[in-house]
Amino acid sequence: EVSFGDSKMNTIGNKAFSGCSKLKTVSLPASITTLPEYLFQNCTSLESVALPNTLTQIDQCAFYECVKLKSISIPASVKKIASDAFAYCKIENLTTPFVVSNLFTTSLKKLTLLDVCNSIPASSLASCKDLEELTLPFIGTTPNANGENAILGALFGTSANTDMKQVTQYYTDGKSKTYYFPKNLQRLTITSPCTEIQYGALYGLSTLKELTISSSITGIAEKALYGCNGLE
Image (cartoon, rainbow, N blue to C red; front, side, top):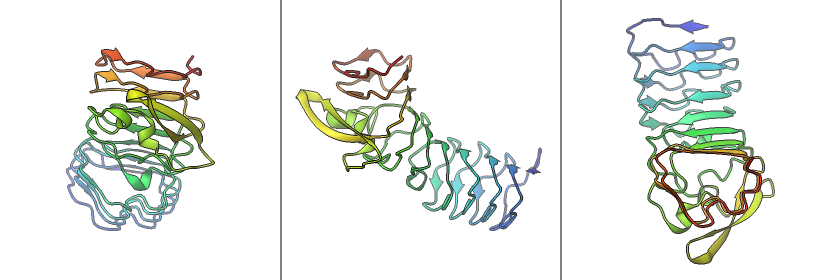
């Protein structure tokens, strides 16, 4: 275990902990702003890392092959994450301020996108076949999206995948598309800042058992929850 307490340290060098194969827990100092390249490379026993709210950047391969790191909470202060920062990790529980494509993988079971997220690329969750719990600031690709971009299917995409559940979702003007959702997606939370759940937003999502809606939402449009017969 490594803890820095009240340390005022503001820099850590590349590969500082690389190869510390028995290291399990790290609590980084509140003064750190960047996690450098290969910082925890091959820390194959690493299970927990506390990231400070001062952090702004996570560099290349910072967590390379940290195979036991199952959960990570990336603070809202982070503005940049290298595409391979978590290469060969198997993250199951992720909290992040924006979409991190290399972390949206088949191992992910719980995803929380923080309220600072203002856009979610279409089909960005297409590989998340085992996702069970999802927390979003809004449904769709942006808070003010409409039509096919205002339904949950837009985030999972239309590419056929036999490991996922095929669902036809209807949106504005009776148009429809077939999307592929995780078979065990059971819990959905909408936090903010959207004000309405739009037409057909969750149409046909029968796997859903729990839905939590932000107090900022003032309306639910026609057929928004049509066919959500798993809700308890």
